[in-house]
Length: 390
Ligand code: PLP
Image (cartoon, rainbow, N blue to C red):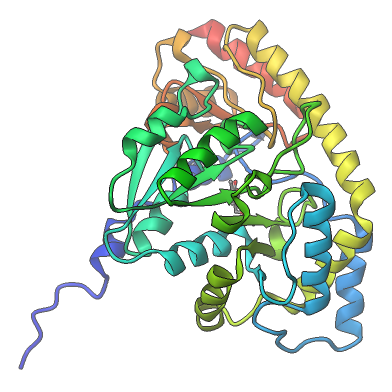
């Protein structure tokens, strides 16, 4: 019988929209002299001793697969790190999986917990992959909007009104991409109370946990009373250790969830890159001074850019973490897409329009300050000239 097929592509893949961040990368890529505040990655090269550990692993011939969950030595280091830095304890053998970046950890979490039609509450503005990850896993993403009036902190009552009988989890990110907003212990606790009351999981994307600039100590969702066993904690090496290209992350969860995740992971990815895992062991053992240096530098840049934006009339709340400023461009009367496109064409500065991160991101632009202070100074000069010209 002759096929009536019109396409090989699934409806799901057809309906997926390309990431709005990529569109701006592509536009900027062909242009000369562009200053990019668009990219969400450190401008630092991975510290040499970490690169050297990977080279040594290759020299020693460690080129085969590792266990599905990752090299045990690395999982032990992760357990030690999580306990030391964030006061949460996980068993290296059963509760930690080394993944291909935090990206695959998020995917793994969704695929493991969701039955078709189950809902995940996604707090926007947020990292562009959350909603597609929920949908690709057969779930339904229920978007709730954190607003600038609350410094982009989601209120428990907003979450509560989105909970239905199908809600399985809340996806949270603190410090947040794109807003830089950091939730303190009391704010996390209020969300945790809701999760406990409604028997929900929290998928806590804590990839920027190390990059927090407040005096108050960073609190992990899993460290809140009663939350360790209902949190899937996602983290990784990309941001804090400047290791985006190594594609290495990890996920920690109570044994019931992590053993189910491991089944999915072993078929989907088998294991993370061996050489990257050796690099990560070195990062955790000896990389603390590097992280501290980078954090110092990000803090200086944050202070500069936030103050500069406010001075030139782009109201900007002080981001508590990550490396993004999220100023309002409402005073210009332009949409975030128009602002970003015209700024790029006229002044050669690439920023990301806030609406790509969700409805409440409209009226804002995301500016990554993971770039040198000199470049930031020049970018602010150009942005001011652009605003003055409007
Ligand atoms: N989560 C957030 C909030 C991010 O901003 C990013 C990258 O930009 C990721 C996860 C993905 O990180 P990875 O490079 O570890 O896959």
